[in-house]
Length: 207
Ligand SMILES: Cc1cc2nc3c(=O)[nH]c(=O)nc-3n(C[C@H](O)[C@H](O)[C@H](O)COP(=O)(O)O)c2cc1C
Image (cartoon, rainbow, N blue to C red; front, side, top):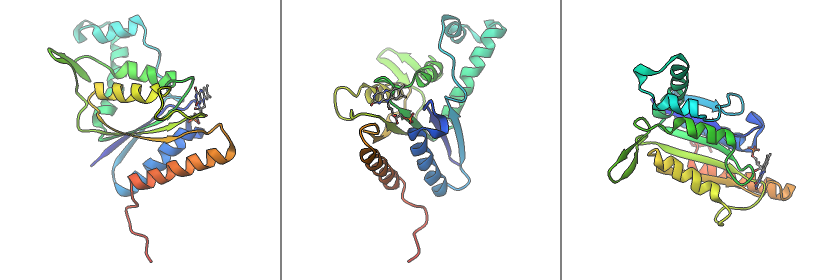
């Protein structure tokens, strides 16, 4: 049975435009995959702490040498990683905030990049260990960036996921949400059409 992990990064949680698009995709995916497991991690509700020297030290320490605090930190990171390892499909609700990813998502990334667990170093460079997964990213922006040099967010997310082994990544954009009401409606409609194309309805509509 398949497992989908949905990671919402909007500070508005369920009310975010990116969350709504991700929710629409996940609802359609569920219809196509009855009985599948869906895990939702909302970073506005369960914020991942910033990575500190202490927390990073817990990752580096040998398991048998970790003190109680370090054990708790490592266990928390292990839980996040376990969700990723279990997932066949990973869905991101990804707003653009101040030209980049929400800091909550960066903190999440900082807690799942673990040498020897999600990637390993080799003589020819790092190799991602989260293989065989497909990711969908629902990216919402007030302005217009996709396909321009200003869109460093897409490259960052794509490169980071690839670093972990997740190379099959599909981006769906809803841009220009702050430009005008018309532009916003059109962008959201376009994104919804993209979702329908990505996941056709499971059951044919009766004539
Ligand atoms: C704090 C903050 C910073 C933002 N920075 C940008 C930005 O740099 N570029 C942009 O195009 N839109 C920016 N926006 C607009 C959001 O990208 C847009 O509202 C999007 O819908 C947010 O997704 P969400 O509704 O899922 O949170 C910003 C919005 C907020 C709240």
